[in-house]
Image 1: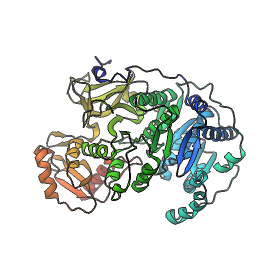
Image 2: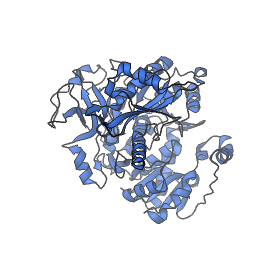
Image 3: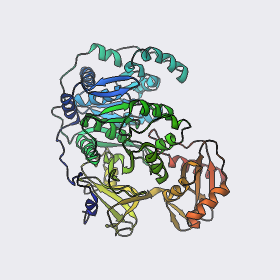
Length: 563
């Protein structure tokens, strides 16, 4: 099943090698090496608080020592349920320093989702935010969780913000949580203040061992735990550093908005920053105004993001007040990047914004456009170093011809070990090291790849295959549209028909007739949306990816009730 030729390598600039050297060490060892290189270098900036690599290391060792005393053994799973903050970085490395496995957990999970993930991963400890304590403490009776470590945002805020924060929290969240230190509930701040740093316990951990369980929902069924090894994450971060070949070791600032509980944020912000001794500028959640202020004041140079984040910034009413010229390089992921958004953001910042592609199962990046060489708008670019990719024909299952649409398959050192405790699911997507992505696309004669759509998202209307992304690209070109998503909805005549959900820019009005007329100029008649629904906002994941599946489920439910 090897691909015949990596024709994309001819597009590579001289600065990017086709093959790379990867350190055969685990993430904890590489963290310690980064600390030794420049211990006094700032590792984290968080809402006014700075931490050096040395301070980050000391706090990580203290927490690691404490977890070992609580009974954490090599290979044990520890859930981390935190937003982007210093404690998230400390906890990540503390677990790895102890030889454990991190279970990334979304703070937005409901009790049901949390119970499922903790039981599936068999985690015995969880590190969480104080606001989540009422939800988390219930898990002791429902899962194998024995110990809960609780922290607050204020624990790593500078004076006087740490004093003021509880009052702001009470006012904004309308909740006040009082947690006491007990035999099974442990306060993060007290652990750091009273513990002594231990020696790294990860010496015997191989780079082939599991570093994290990253849960992915897919479109159906229960979430699956993706087993990502130390090697997977190190390889992907190393690829990323070579792709960003103009970035200087130890001199960049990375804006950390994409959550670490999403592997995209974990790899492109947390792991990359530690390997390259960059400073992470962390924000616990995305807010357009706060993000603009942070860029203006802290002047980050790297900005991994998602299309909805860039769109929100471009449409903020106070945008003109902020200087974003420090932004040099942006990699957009998690969803297709509209060409209009790319062009506007580059004009605004003077930096480069390119689209990348990947999956949780590939740590996550497999393809990207070049930042400083030819890139093709609408393309996901070319495979990264040491990464192979091909299009599999729907008809034959073999490698498709150039420009033929089929399923994208990828292979490389960043591809997962498999799904946790699900050999059949693993077998369904893995073929001789190749990962079947479930995404529909094609490759052009230069080796650039294009995603047409998710295999399961294709709309079949009146016998025609309609790819939502193609319709969305047209809608994004309309000057009044801020966000758009297209889905197939049940139709008694056509089987399915095209429906567009639209979020308009602030203060504008637009009609269905206007959009219909606009769409017909650029799309074949059968692709033009038959239905439009205007909304104030669209459902999204924590990383800003529009939840197309939620809208489809909503439409199917409406259809059931109507029939």
